[in-house]
Structure formats: structure tokens, C-alpha cells
Length: 293
Image 1 (cartoon, rainbow, N blue to C red):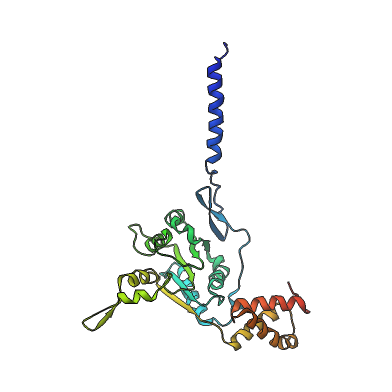
Image 2: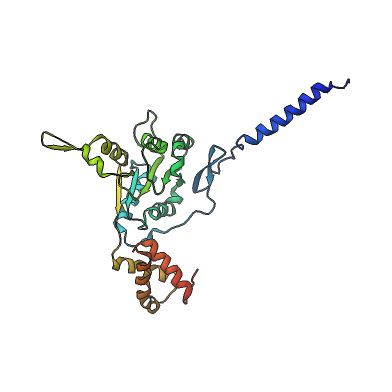
């Protein structure tokens, strides 16, 4: 076989170099989805998104969530209907920080995973991928909650329109095995300004909000179930502290002695919430007898 001309050899070498550079820029081939998992995250790598199984999901027992019994009852009823294949609503959980909004959602996974419930966490920046995620889930036997935590949009963000469309407004219907659960510190998911009140008009004696306010309200209204959370008073905060101290193995006498420290902890943190109570119990138990972690 005759040798290749030098010009052709140089061309092939340059072509190999170019191809190697191009291949390094391409997204990696998507890995097969582990449909046996209970929880997932939507992750983007080099512009390519895929479902990744969460091997060690955060397990929270509903029984450990004190001070939110009414909210627990409402979200549990909705989730139970969904898992049973009956009609159920998308849920928006709003209110004070650290009061158990995301914990309630995680507790639903812990309670209903044996009946086929699955949880998919999607960050706000990835909400534009909701149509792709929904397409992956359509036709599967499991029941999926797409969970987005701590939502807050600015005007014009792409995820806002994607979420609005999936909730109610797209030409494509959402499969019966998919619901959206979202948490936010804002009832309407977007900042509200005093200047927007100037758009309000009075027509035949009726007060009608301006277009800006109507647009902001329109997203939250697409959630069929609203669940509100409120700051805890002192008694509720101390009750939650006592619960977690007991979970960490402290005795009744030790828990009673921790009261002053628990109040001091909340003053230093500037808040009384379930999160602050859990953080206090974790610290206090670690410094005293019991199975501190």
C-alpha cells in the first residue's frame, strides 16, 4: 500500500486535533435514570439537564413537626388523594422562614414513598426545563411531586413563565401523575412595590388592581391549594425545643433546665422558628448528656 501524501497526513492530523477539541465541548452522554430511587434532583452539566437520583434523601417524620398541625393536615390530605390516584391540587406553601414549609414536603415523601410517591427537586434557575421533566414522567406508574424551594421571581425571569405555563396555561396538559409543590416567603412570589398601588382604579364603586398587580397575583392563583405559615410564639418555640431535646436523649429535668438557654438562643438569632429550635437542641445536646450529634 502506497504511503499517503504528506499534505494529506498533515490535514488528517489537524482534523483529529479539531475533533478532539469539539468533543471536549460536547455535553457528556446522559446516564440512564435510576427509576428505583425515591428522590431526584434536576441537574445541568455543560448545558444539558438530567434527572439524578438522590441516594440519601433527607428523611423527616411528620410526627417531628410541631406547631404546624393544621398545615400538616391540609398537605397530608392533598398528598393522600394524589397518591391514591384521585384529583389533587398543586400546592403553594408561604410564610415566615424556618417554620417548616420545606420540611412538610419532605415529610410527605417519608410518609408516602412506600405507596409510590416520588420527589423531584428543581431549582428556580432550572424551571425552564419543566416541560422536559414532565415529558420524562408521563406514563410512569409512580406519583411525582416536583418540588421547588424558596421561590422568588424578579420581573422577566424565564422560570416564571415556564412555571405559570405548566401550572395552567400550556397547550399541553400536565400528566395526572405529576403535581407541583413550591415554597416561598412571598405570597405572590414576586416583589411588590408601593408605586404599583398607583395603578389601582375605581370603576362603578369597585376597586380594581392595576395590570402589574394582576400579573403578579396570576401565578400564585394557579396553585389550587395555599398553605400559610406564621412565626411561632414563645410557648410554641419552647415546645419544639423540648421535642428535639427529647429526641436527642435528654431527660425531662435536663429539658426543663434548658429553657433559659433556649430563650437566649432565640434572642441571639433574632427569631423563634422550628429551624432555630432544632439548631438550639442540636447545640445544647452536644454540650450535655444524651446522644448529641
